[in-house]
Image 1: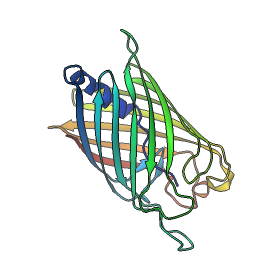
Image 2: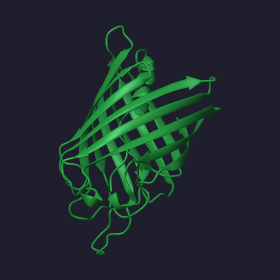
Image 3: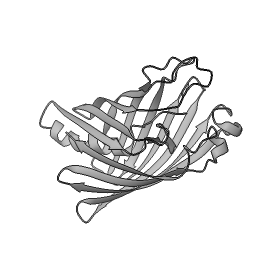
Image 4: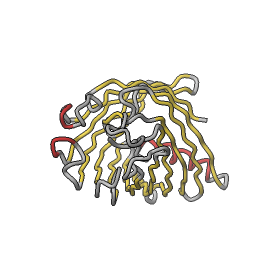
Length: 244
């Protein structure tokens, strides 16, 4: 069971776009809200394959500094011995710097994120922190994420990812993603797995300021590797979102 969302290429793109306005103003404020058919984080469902409602709030400052928060409903199932609850919400807090490297097409995003699960009463709790570096060139980005003590104190964790996106026919976009998850402990996943790969292909369409998307999301994990359930199976994920 894992958490959700890396402040990745998609978020970085939004922040970098907002920096144009920040050059005129002292800061720029933005918000977003979304409804998704399944909350997938690095390929694994965080809602038992059910729908989730999500939203976030960001503030960016000159010369590229940003802070924000993002939240989603989650469902990690019941605690087997009935001793507590994993909680029904995830709240992320993040901050960092994103900007171009000189007068080039290269850019970088360096930041920190803290993932909190209010209502989680299981010991150890799921809360954890991550650090990330995401260099990019035009529409291509490569991310490196590190956690010194991952979800529920399961040890060190690394995540390496690549993303490529492009826009076509004016209001359409397509995005490709691949990621590699590397755990310090071999017992985080079932069957003593200490790593896995996730991937996705996303098609997006914007109509009158509302974003629609469908994504094919999956992992290379078998059901027996993923806590004896189908939350790691390949699946289609639909979403509708609005930036405010």
